[in-house]
Length: 128
Image (cartoon, rainbow, N blue to C red; front, side, top):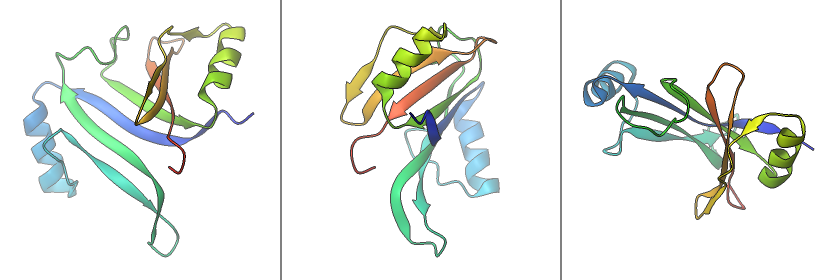
């Protein structure tokens, strides 16, 4: 069974999210959208789009989206079979949160690493 197959997104908190978003837009050319981030479309070696995106997003430091972790970031990892991976991680004694979300955006679960960082596991919808 494959475990992680790629990075689905990078999420981090900022003391002044709008100012930091503007900095990244101005200085690094990231197309920050009104929701606070962007989705980078994957391309092949010739620059042609292929299925898949990587999300990059800055949120407010006051948000609790990374709880129970107190880290200022979270990485979203793409996986092929979320339920199988969650089962294996639990068997291996990992701290996997109980909740599994299933939505139009795919299936999501979360695991806390040994240093207290929350990692998001994401099985994209078919075709992505």
